[in-house]
Image (cartoon, rainbow, N blue to C red):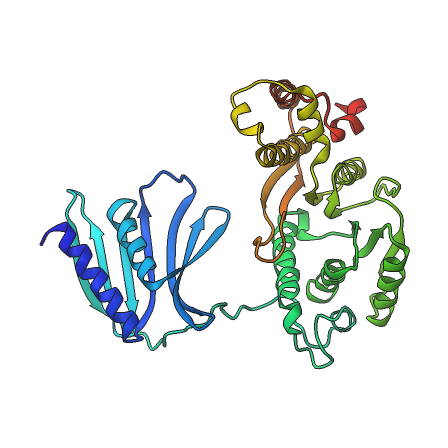
Length: 396
């Protein structure tokens, strides 16, 4: 049997399983393409606005990307993927598994085996997920209009509820990396309406059973009064909200510092406060990277990416990456192990890159390397200074 015929027979069975409503899922593995961090692709059937589609989950080392295609387009994509980049693809139906696989000598084989699973096909767009923050009985979720009195999430608050839970999932895994997996003093800078602040306090106190003191710092007086009122109604006795800006708040005892969507250099102010307080964990979601963009526009340096940065939108994206890249390097200089990853899909909220620093150690030699690297970056892009670097200039 030729390779082309093996693939075509596989695709025929895929199409038939969809039409007969016996398709469960498909899995592509043993990737040999050019994207270094791509591991697998998982395919499932979904119904979106009453239209049958195939949802592709691109599983990378540190993130997932989803693409929804029509069944015809999806079948064509699977054909291309198994012809070029993936060495094995398995189709799961209610009664069998069909496997197409590249052999060592280039031959493609097709085989079947019985599937004894009793699983039924699902057309749900979003899989039911076990949430850390349960909606029932949460006064703060009711007060913030996320749920009703019975604990049912309002339709227009579904995305916010998902965001809250993903945030807690991320912080939960980060806290586990700390000594004894515990925090005592938490500061949320720029806490806003407090959605995530309340959820984290709830998680730390009521799920992890940790004796945590938590402060939300917010510039707007009305938000501070609102949140303190909700905290009192919720019996969150060790959570308080204070009025003030990030740069004006001072504390020398912080285990976990959070700053989500602090605009422009306010993110630098938050990181600076965390470093100075010796925080074990610093988590920021930067926003509005204006300072470095202005520096790049003023410097007008010609380099290998000038063909991109002559366009405003590409200059903005480049400035974002440089700003956060230097922030990560400065955190490393002060002994933090850094991570940079996406907080939540753009479908829910834009610009949600998380920059994370976990306190550790660093050698004197490594510090010198980082300083040289920061200087090279600034020279290459015509940057006079980075705000966080200026805040810490006496210690670098």
